[in-house]
Length: 266
Length: 347
Image (cartoon, rainbow over all chains, first blue to last red):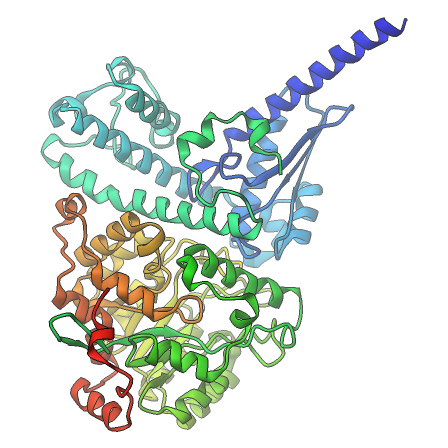
C-alpha cells in the first residue's frame, strides 16, 4: 500500500510540476508593454504556484514603488488572461507587491474590476488604447531590428518590400536572423491580418513600404528601439538595486537560456 | 569652470540641481521613504562605484557639501535650483523654493532659483505664484504634469487652467518652463506616454521656452519629433547623461538623436544633483566622442563647440546670463581661487 501511495504521490508531484512549468511558460509570453520584454525575463515575477485546487497564485514586483499604475495594472491583467487560458486552471490571483498603489490595484484585480473602475473617472478610459499604442511600438521595434538584419545581409530594398509573409517565413536566415524573424511575426498581426499572400513589411498603418524610401523609413524607426533599450536598461538596473539582485544587467541571451525555475528563485 | 588641456575655459551652467531633505525625520509617510529610496536606486545604479554616497548623506546633505560638490570639486559655474515640493510626502516639503532660497541668498552669483506651480491650485495658486515671483524674481519654473493628487491623475499643459497659469507666468517675466517628462518617479497614467501637450503650448506661447527635462525619456521617440518642429522646445539631459558611464553606447545613440532632431543649440546639461555629481559627469562628457557607427546613422558629431553649448552657453542664453560678466563676478568673489590649472585638465 505504501509503495502504491508513493507512486500516486509521485505522479501527483510530477503533474504539479508540469503545471507550474506550464504557468511559467505562459507568463514568459507576457511582456512589459513599454519594454517589449517578457515579465519573467525582466525578473518581475517572484511567484507562480499552483495549489491543489488548480488555482494559480502569481506575485510580481516592479523596478520602483512608483511605476505607472496603468502599466502595472495592464501587466497584471495580461498575466491573468494568459494563465486563465490554460484549460485546467480554476482561478488566478495576481498580487503586486511594494507599490504605491498596491492595495488599490490588488483589490481591483481580486474583484475583477477594470482599471477605470479601480481608479475612478480620472483614469482616463480603458487600457485598450494604451495596450494598442505599445503593441504598435513593439511591432515597430521588432520590425526595424529585422529590417536592419536583412539589409546588412544584402537583401535589396526592392526584394524586402515585396516579400509576402510566406516568402519571409521561407527566407534563409542565420540563427540571430531567425530569432528576429520569429519575434517580428509575433507582432505582425498588430497592423494587419496575416494572410499568406499579404506583404511581410508594412508600416504601422498597414501601408506598403517603398523601396526607394526604405532607408529613411528605417532611420525614422530607430528612435523607437533606442527608447525601449534605454528604458529596459534603466528598469533592470533599478530593479536590481531595489531588490539587491546579484547581476545588475543580465545579457538577454544568458537570461533566456536559464530555465524558468532557476531564474526565479528569489 | 572646466579648463581643457589646451587651456580653453568652458563655462558650465548646471540646468538641474536640488537641495532636498529626504531624511527620515522629514518623512511624513511610507511614500516619503520610498521616494528617496527610489532616487537612491537611480544614484546607486548609474554612478561609478567611487562616486557612490552613503544612504544618510544622500537623504540629506548640507549647503556646504552641495556647494563644494558643484563648484569646488565639480566644474559647475552656476546651477539652477529646481524645486520638487512633495508636501504630501515630507513634513517640510522635499525640495521647496523656500528651502533652495537659502543657497541663492548666500551665493547669489552661483545659483538661479526656480519656482513651481500646479494649475490644479486654482486662483489661490496664481496668487501664490505672484508672491513667489515677486519675492524671488523668478525666471523659471519646474512643473510635474504627471503628479497624482487626490482624485486627479495628472494634468496637461493644454488644460484651460494650465493656460491661465502660463499666461500669468509670462506676465510675471518667467521665461523658462521646465517640464518633467521623464522616467516615472510618481505614479501616472494619463500622461504616461504623452509629450504632445508640449507641442501645443510651445506654439501658443512663443515667448516662453519649454525645457523638457530628461529629454522626454522614456518617450524619446515622441519627443524628438515634437522638438524638431518647435523653435522654443529644449531637451534637458538630466538622467540621460549618467548613462555615459554604465551604457556609453546608449548614451551615444541618445545624444546623437538629440543632436540630429533637436540640435546643438537646444540641449541643456543637468547633473540632477544630488542624484549625480558634476565632476564625473563632465569628465566623462568632455572625453566622450560619438562612435563612428552611430555617427553614420545621424551624421551627429559631439564637437568641442557643441559641448560648450550644451554645458553652459545654451542655458546662459535662455536665462539671460552674460557669461563674461558672470565669470568676472565669480572670479572677483574668489570663486576660482581653488583652480590650479594642472589639476583641472582632463584625466
